[in-house]
Image (cartoon, rainbow, N blue to C red; front, side):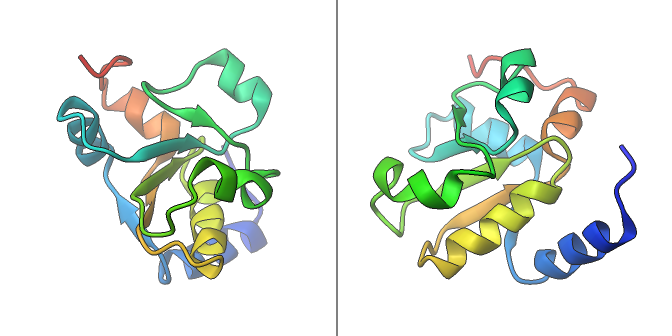
Length: 123
């Protein structure tokens, strides 16, 4: 998907301020049953069309409003993903501003996971 130059510039700037994680590393966390929250920040229609194993839907439009109820521990490990890694980067920055200290954006998002042919179940 082609994004506007301003959006891409913003996401590139944000990436300098957040932690990113590779899809393979996230799959290993799932496979090893590591305790972390895997959050899909895409829209409800995207979630309904398909999502990654163990993920929780919490769209970019509501994550800041609802994250503290879902994850009250500000030091808990959180991995965010979206379609391509842009929205999750922006959401990660906002969670950091809210005091979360162990939040990561998955590089390349859902599309990268599918392109790498990673399993859609963690088993």
